[in-house]
Image (cartoon, rainbow, N blue to C red; front, side, top):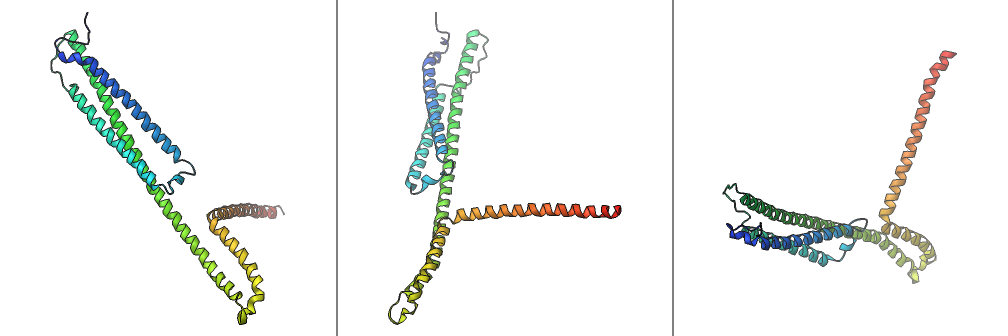
Length: 258
């Protein structure tokens, strides 16, 4: 008895077990690599979902660069492995075409086995291409997220500068008035009015701080409130207009009845 996979007229068929072992090793590595990329992408998406999507970007620019460099290294490693798989496929003669059209049973079996092996290596190359494309899309999404985080940070700094300007606009005049009221000697005429100054300054300062800290929330709440009132007023006007139209349409009928 002899192995049906080994053909005596083709010495290269003796390497069938070695080729299948190499193929199984590459398929196992491919499965682990695809699983790692999928898990990493899923963890990244979960980390950047919800209301705290960009919270971790604050003050961690170096970490972002390290993560991006790690993905770039992974992409380079995948390209190297892709070239290695292609070289192995060439070495195993998977791209070679058999021009002999023999009708013998063992020749047909040999050709079918070679075609199956070619398809297996072709599928492996397609998986590598898919892995490379998936990683490229992930890196593109990462770069877009970094740009959005930078835009949000610039917007936040601009809002902070605007809030400081608002505080300075009110605080500077108050400080000047306080300095005038607190003068002594011949400038002490306004000293009895100093409690009045504090009675006005403290509430105004408190309202200003509240507006600066929670200005966006207050603005959104006020808009919702005015929109709700506007809808209620519109509804009342619609009801009144409907009733007026009914009264106007009923008056000619009453006159005809009289």
